Length: 159
Image (cartoon, rainbow, N blue to C red):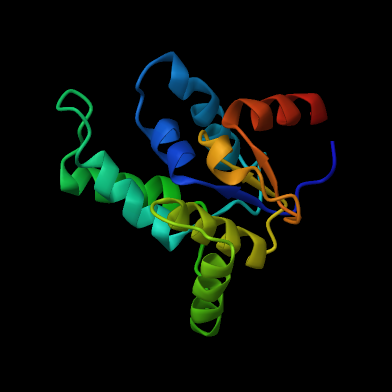
């Protein structure tokens, strides 16, 4: 396995890694465990992902939904306390939007393109997401896209 100098975690991994929704959460939980145990260093996420985490966690189906205070506590302890949180620099925002227009990015895909650009600019080697199809398909991007299960397998193979 190539050395990972920066792993970028998307919202889907943050949610699955901290809220147990059954067997589908296991790979994301393994990724978050690797972060907590120090086996995965230099992990980062975007401020956008933190906001999205809070928004989704507080509107999940009732049996899974977090109260706002609980969502904040998990964000503070599991995300802000363990990951580097990065954002797109102000000077890069308008060029990013112009690039999105040139690439005909529309609708909700803009959010994924934004997250991918933040990951790339932060020096991440890989984006870990459970929405891989939203991020794959840009062959010019130097950032690999893996599911939580794929990253977990790479971590096991490398240990």
